[in-house]
Amino acid sequence: MPDLVLRNANLPDGRGPIDIAVAGAQIAQVAPAIEAQGASELDVTGRLVTPPFIDAHFHMDATLSLGMPRLNRSGTLLEGIALWGELRPTLTHEGLVERALRYCDLAVSRGLLAVRSHVDVSDPRLVTAEAMIEVRERVRPYLDLQLVAFPQDGYFRAPAARAALERALDMGLDVVGGIPHFERTMAEGAASVAELCRIAAERGLLVDMHCDESDDPMSRHVETLAAETIRNGLQGRVAGSHLTSMHSMDNYYVSKLIPLMAEAQLHVIANPLINITLQGRHDSYPKRRGLTRVPELMEAGLNVAFGHDCVMDPWYPMGSGDMLEVAQMGVHVAQMTSVAARQQAFDAVTTNPARIMGLRDYGIAPGCRADLVVLQARDPLEAMRLRARRLHVIRAGQIIAETPAEITHLSLPGRSRDLDVSTIAPPAE
Ligand code: FE2
Image 1: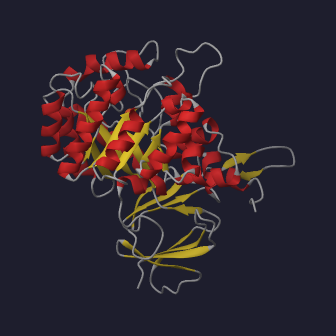
Image 2 (image 1 turned 45 degrees about the horizontal axis):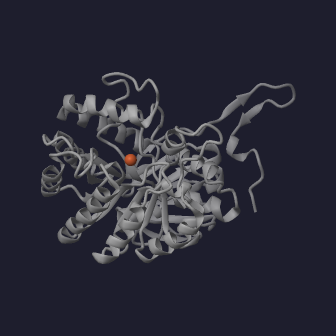
């Protein structure tokens, strides 16, 4: 018998009203009018119930360090890199763990229950890797944290990075990272992609590289990443993060590149909040948008997710752990306002990143882990439009966070009432 039944849920795929029965840590049944004597009941009539938000691209070792040791005055990528170089030697295990745990609390409050974080392994002390491994264990009951060994100063460019990356993988980091566009030359960037894919294939690991995060239309590392993925038999196991140079590439070249990426079954992670802020800084006007070609990649069948990337760190002073904010920015920057694209934008912060992280038992179906988020919204569009409150966050069948609905009391002539913004318009058909 179920322990908990959510009554009259709207699901992200448009089904509903429908009941969700939870037994222990799993979803037992999804059907109308489930019989469940003795079970706890949660009336979610008119509310969207979604599997949790997933962030496939984050930097947990840098988060909440804003102002340490000083602010990024220009707000540019290059000053952010310089600032991180000043901060990194002073990082301590305790400080890293404490900030990461605080961020994970915030994430849970926003219904964000799985994060892939890049971890800078350029400093051979590997204090970042040690701290993030501790965090991964401590948050495991409520948040799935996947760690990428990320040679942030360049695999070849930073002298100690190659040995440190291997040691970080030996310590138990989950994914092989890279940053080919930050190597000294295009050739060294390509060589780093080949070497890192070989390491991943030998160790049986996934790959996720910061790739072509520039406005340079001639940056070609995603092509190399796709080719090395195929050469090493890593199809479906490799993600290219950022890929902002694709925005500026020649259209004819892209018409060849996207099919190659599809052949390699590359996953793509765009980071709309960060790249709309950091890219195009050398432009006068018009200024380019800093986003890869999201709709075209989706159209070609590639799995595309939106990542948060940064929250209050050397590169970005804003952010709130809210993947609906990320999706909302993605909708705007990639012009995803068609009916189909709006749904795809919601998928880009839920089911698509779950595939990238290889999360098993994710979704709203019998046998899936009972990880659910109840939103003060009727459907995915409204959730993104309002960045709706997360009324209940459920992990493995247990409610782990609750936020009261936002209700405003209006005192207006002839129109005084309690207003719930999620019911102001009739439901979309
Ligand atoms: Fe990043």
